[in-house]
Image 1 (cartoon, rainbow, N blue to C red):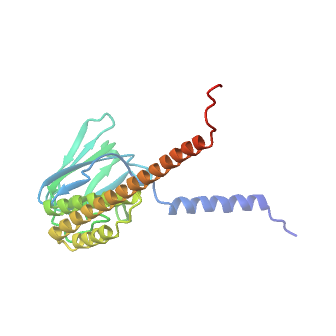
Image 2: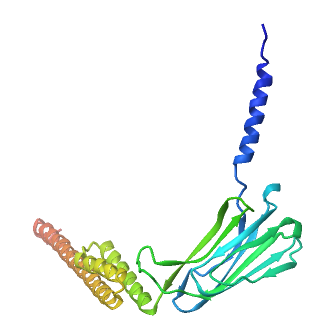
Image 3: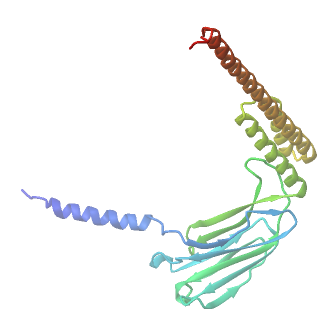
Length: 266
């Protein structure tokens, strides 16, 4: 009867699993160690952004790969700067268009850090949204292996607006604050809330003049409701104060009425 060495079999199975996992688990992502990206920008203006990539090579299989990028900006100019381990610039490429691909990143060339710069014009807004605020793709960077799969390093979105949409948004935000203040005072600004919601709907439709007017009306109604509530509270406090004063005066008069006449000989 042949006996199987269970310990040896377990080691073989474990080694096989390790090899399989190493082959199937993707390399860790490239690190974004610096970003200078605008949070918002006006339509038609020119903006710039800079992204710094580090930890470029996670294992021997990733010591050479391609960098790709895309954007919704128009009139775009890209600048890709390669730095070595001392921080010295060792190469620079300047792709054109709203996207580029195939920018080589290789350990053999001494590249230790890559800086991606972009400059372009902020695009028109396709559809407006108050919450969440409408955004466009400022930049997306992708890493791909030669003949292999690709993965997104990261992407950056930026809120874009026009003067009219910004004015309407500001009015709606003011109305929202006024409504919250009114509620905090104990008021129920239902009319203001209705106009506030209609203002948001008008904003989403791109009707900014209507949205601004509705929001302004909501602010006035909310402030009026708050002031009315405060006036009512003051009246209540005043009446309560008079009642307390009346009770005190009545108590004093009652106490005095219960006292006997003064004794002249006392």
